Image (cartoon, rainbow, N blue to C red; front, side, top):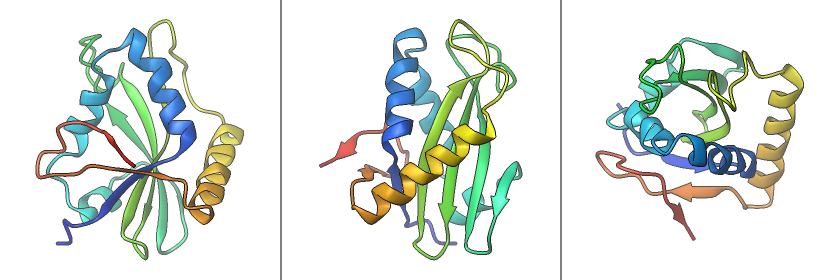
Length: 143
């Protein structure tokens, strides 16, 4: 299995994360806990697929919210783009399912906008790459 792949994020994801961090201080660690130790094939095979075009999958991932103690059902929803051709996974958008910043679902238009930002940032080489080690302890920008 190819465990050596790149983690990147879009500006929309980083804005979402910053917004949620105040209310849910563990959200960053919760995301890391979901993905640590996973190889690309394991990420690419996650089952809640929103879109699939052969080499690229857009996937909604349920993330437990350790601040709310509600497990994955009351946690976060993370939209990722997994690209097997480029061997990278991009964190595209993030939202809380419950709580003061919670919402039932992300609108299709929001996903389309997030993907558009990803495409523009990919072309402009402005996606942020994140440190990844064997445990993916935290998400930190690599400048």
